[in-house]
Image 1 (cartoon, one colour):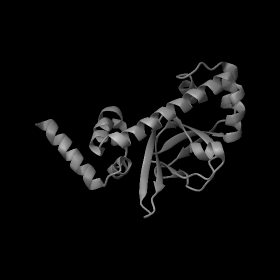
Image 2: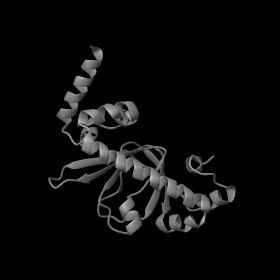
Image 3: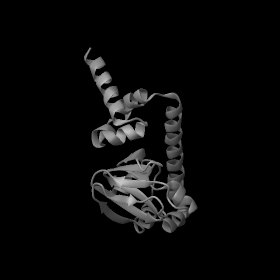
Length: 193
């Protein structure tokens, strides 16, 4: 079974005829580690499915430093949501942190497929899920320390810690790499005690 169909079917049932229409508009691409899929200022005209790989969303701060917003772990759908839905320039960059296999669909095709009940239901559920994750991240930023968020990553998203350079994890947590080193040292020494 196609990996994207398998992913969609984890949300909704997709008939063979609906899948044929979806598959017809997909294009397979491979991105190398470090490659930028979308740059800030570009218009995002694609809906993507990450079959294999690991991605990072980041922005440039006023001082020119990079700030990691979040990560995408395969298998999952992604896009620059604001740019994709409103046709505005992207405010973020999307980078492959390892060699990645991505399926791309043009914006017009993604919107045309909304006529299919299965696709429409899938997109609705996916948007709800992304909104939930976004709200959860914002709530954690307001109510949890960087140390608390790091410990949660260890238990719930350890794959991010395995795959991402620590400087990106620190940036995601909103702290300096040195602060992350102290948090990690404290955490592991308390576990040994």
